[in-house]
Amino acid sequence: MTTTTTVSATSPAAAVGAALALDGPRPKRPNAVASSLSFGWRALLKIKHVPEQLFDVTMFPIMFTLMFTYLFGGALAGSTEAYVQWLIPGILVQTVVMITMYTGLTLNKDIEKGVFDRFRSLPIWRPAPLVGALLGDLVRYTIASVIVMVLGLILGFRPAGGFVGVVASIALLLFFSFAMSWIWTMFAMLMRTEQAVMGVSMFILFPLTFASNIFVDPATMPGWLQAFVDVNPISQLVTCMRDLMSGTMPTGSLGIVFAWCAGFIVIFGPITMRLYNRKS
Image 1 (cartoon, rainbow, N blue to C red):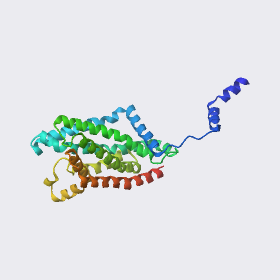
Image 2 (cartoon, rainbow, N blue to C red):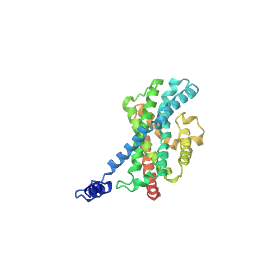
Image 3 (cartoon, rainbow, N blue to C red):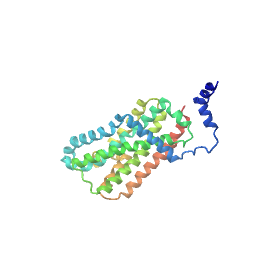
Image 4 (cartoon, rainbow, N blue to C red):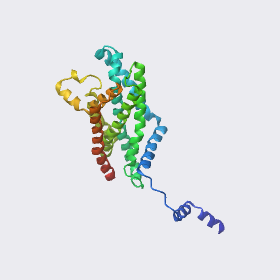
């Protein structure tokens, strides 16, 4: 009888019941920052366990930079050394902006697996899983930016703005990418498969990145195309980064870029959260 009582008292169910019955202060509810950072750390742990996820931020930047430099450099600028001064800020934007769509793919995969159903039941700040995923992706964007800049320096890129100009331009790019990623989180909630999310994302990203001032001066384009390029947020970002890297403060274009970032967050953030709360 004594043995039976001891086993029962130390069983898992009894241990859980005893823990719940203990008097004392309840654990403090995590704030918004702590919750978001925890989910950001989760995103980094996923990279640790599946390092192949870094392929897009390591090999793609190298491939794009080398390919466009040596394909277009001689034809557009007379030499690769001259063209790389124009290309590197633009190819940096293209590389990072293109990989922002993987945020939506990752979230869509988590939704399909039912992980987000568990997140919604936790006593945490509601947007924390989404914000945390975006914060984790900022690390990937930073890695891609560093790779492009190092390769650009090897190819002969010499920013007149020095280290400060480069850091300021990359910081601006990271903020823009964070804001733009809310578009892909919205699609992650709307689409039923990650293939659909990728298809829609590419449909939007290709015109934005290629119909811009990344590769050539818009002055060489037809008038109707120039009109689109001039209002393209990617073109505004590239212009601003070129100015920062050249050592000038682009007050006008900087304000436009911040306005685009605010618009992305204000418009697509609430839509994403509404879809997230209604997701079954």
